[in-house]
Structures are given as C-alpha cells and as structure tokens.
Amino acid sequence: MLQIAIPNKGALSEDAVKLLKEAGYKCSRYGRELIVHDAENNVDFIFLRPRDIAVYVGNGIVDLGITGRDLTIDSRADVAELLPLEFGKSRFCYAVPKNSGLTTDKFNGLRIATSYPEIVAQDMKKRNFDVKIVKLDGAVEISVKLGVADCIADVVESGRTLVEAGLEITGEPILYSEALLIAGNESVAENPDVRKLIARIRGILVARSYVMIEYDIEKSKLKSCCQITPGIESPTVSPLENPDWVAVKAMIGKKEINTVMDKLYAEGARGIIVTALASCRL
Image (cartoon, rainbow, N blue to C red; front, top):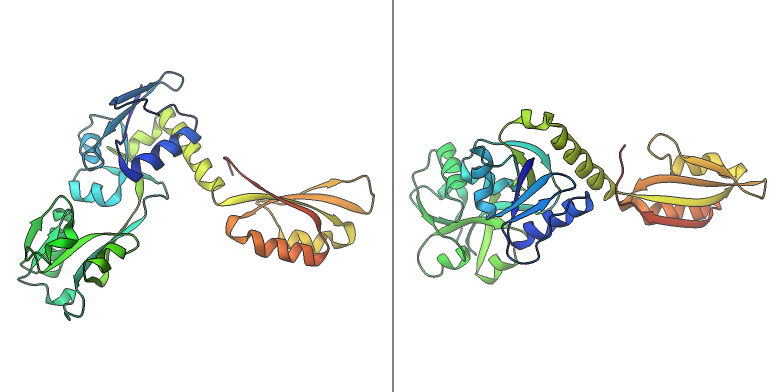
C-alpha cells in the first residue's frame, strides 16, 4: 500500500487534492482527519504541514509527498523530484527598503529576515558573505519596518505585499519554486502503483495545456486547414453527408484557441467547436 503525504492546508493543499481527485483518487477530507484511505487504489493519503513533508519522505516514513520545491530545499531532506506539478509557482527573492540603494552585493554583514533560513544560508555561502539570518515564521515583510532586519528573503507571487510594506525586489530570484511530487529516491518510481500515479497525473497536466477543436471544411481547403491544426500526429478527418465537405478533429494548444479559430474561419471552416480535455495520454 502506498502512503502519500499531501499538504494539510492552504493553496498547495487545495490544488494537490484537486489534481489527485482528477487522477481518480479519493483524498478529500470530511473534517480534520489526518489520514484518508483510498481502498480502490490501495493508497493512504496523509495530511501533514507542507514544511514537514520532505522530512517524512526523506526519512522513509512515507513513500511519496507533494510539497513546494522551496520547502523541500529548506528542509535539507534527501529526496528526489519525480514530477513537477505546475501549480504553486513562485519566486524566492531578496527585498530591500524602496529607494535604499541596497543590492545583493552589499548584503555582507547585514541582517536578513526569512522563513527559509537554509536557502538563504546556502546562497550567502556561495557569495562568501557573513550575515545574520533572522528566522521568522510569518509576516517577514514587516521585519524591516520594525527594525528586526535590514532586508528580507521570501516567496514572491504578485509582489503586492512587498510594495505595501515599502519594499522592492533586488537582484535575480534565488530560485523558482512550484509544487513537486517527491520520493526518497528515484527508484521508487519503478513501483507499479507509483508508475500508474505518475502516468495519471501527467495525463491531466498535458490535458490542461490542450483542447480538442472540431470543424467542418470544404475538401478543397482541407490541406491548408490541416496545416493550421496538425494535431499530435495528424488530424482526424471524417466524411459528411455533403460529399464536398469533411469534418476535422485535432488537439491544439489551449493558448492558441482564438488565433487558430480566426485562421480556420478565414479559410472557410464552419461549425468550429472547442472542447476541454479532462485527461489524455500522448
């Protein structure tokens, strides 16, 4: 039986549960239970603090885990990244008081407040800087205004919170983070149940990037339209009652929907329909 740790709260938890449910697993909680058993797939889903998941996985307590790359690195746990999950994306950046003129090459000797001390320590070691790392569990942005630190290092999504605190990002991001499926080592991926899980998740992630487009077109214009919608291998072409027309079906990138529809309509395609995909295997 597989044991999979997933975040117990927050956006990471919501997105992880949604992804797993779409993959055919039962992992919804009815209350605050810590373990949900999926009898059909023979999996136990264990709800843990996102920051602790990599530690449990790295120590072999659970087989797999879903958590952020930033939390994984900061935990110093020895784990393998099996699959990026394309949600929970963020940047980990340094921020300084606005118009202070502080840049990352001037951090030596300063106080840096952060909830991710290990990530900062590793980066400062690379720079050969001697700094004081002030570990905080939350509200890192206010630390500069309260005189606890000279600058901060934190996860940044929109950057709005930094602006409200009178801070601005300096330098390039230390790392780019997103949710990951992790294991104690890469060999875990050879387990048949793990292979099935990864295949299901990949199918959903791919499907989120594509849609199915269908349209009718005159045979004389079929070649030019198939160049617009080549599909994965080739489009599906079916006859219609009108012998001069055919129906075409193909997968296209979700971001291309409107551009492709414009081109097809200009070529004479009609009855253009776009359908979302739940999952797929390519």
